[in-house]
Length: 219
Length: 219
DNA sequence: CGATGACTTGAACGCCATCAATCGCTGTGG
DNA sequence: CCACAGCGATTGATGGCGTTCAAGTCATCG
Image 1 (cartoon, each protein chain N blue to C red):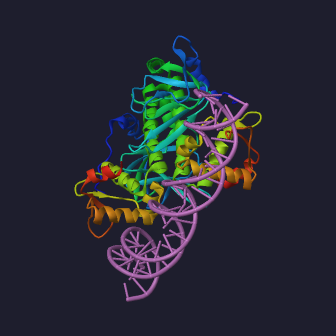
Image 2: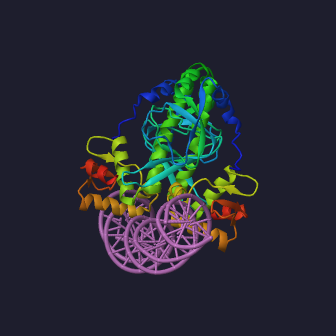
Image 3: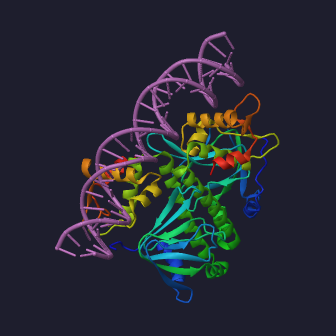
């Protein structure tokens, strides 16, 4: 709600195209709504206008791994193949801008800079999941939660702390932990270490008091 | 040694360029040699001709996460930015084909199909690490080892089983486990389940007797 | 208010890590 | 030719971190 939109210049190129009303439209997704499912045809790509989206994979018994959270300004659902590789769901009431994949492909055919832009965005995703792989494979629970807080603090910066759109369970499924472990780590950072502060009645409005403390824990 | 080279048609386009002796050269790396380091300038991209390479990230205290193994035919070291995001080392005595990144960039400027090829390869990497994220975040040790065996069985298929080029420690650092846990899982699949067989005196020549059994364990 | 859902906190368990011993193979030097 | 060091791998014993199970708190909403 108080989160600044992403104004990364790398996305501007694509947004120039995306901004063209002839090829895009907006749509509203209530909290919990599915945007697309894993292995469904990838007919559109999406940009978050307002709200937040999670992308996840499921195992057959219900275990879930969230690969990324998409915040205002972020583009997601960009596939090179014809099918989505994640399921995407709105975390909160969300507005998305949609662009037909077909029209992107058409532009890409004649515009090398557009293909470049796609490549750059794909590489950015790659870099994010590569770092996340290190977190999931080798970091302790405290390190994971500290890294999460720093990531969100960077991406959601706003006056008076960040407003996390996701539940403890979502955080846990992003970090490869249980929601109880996430909760314990947050309590520890708040009470024992004094790195955090919760604002208001909810437990999702968080102020990071000592980023350096978190950064130290995150190795 | 008995592993068939990768002949994926998607790589052919790039290999057409890579095959040009004017822009490439070969180099030998003895077992253990560093190909490039994390955060070093990315001046070349590489293709495995013979041998095998591992790509990893390190935490400050030495914990290691291997992101991928590169086998004959595979291309790696392709970055969009100017710096490598992994350290790459030869697992066995290895021959690599090198291509100057600059000459790739030059071709890419005028050849949209080349940019496309780069995008496709980047997307393939992305898909691999996305699946690996699910493994690292949510799978049990048995599931991880089963998935590893199936992956290597697919990529190293040869008459009379596969010859793993990597040590138990490498496997462990790829799967986010310890080498002891990997060893126990392999023993279990061999003795208790009868899914595996070791050939010869070494413990790296493995025959998968029942892929279906491994697939079932891997969820 | 009572119901519900998100979160926190406590207690006990279990999977995997850690520590440690041993085995088998290879290579090396006396 | 044998002793032995060294390395990779296996196997056993123990321990700890995060999970699981469970109870309780708090805010929201009918």
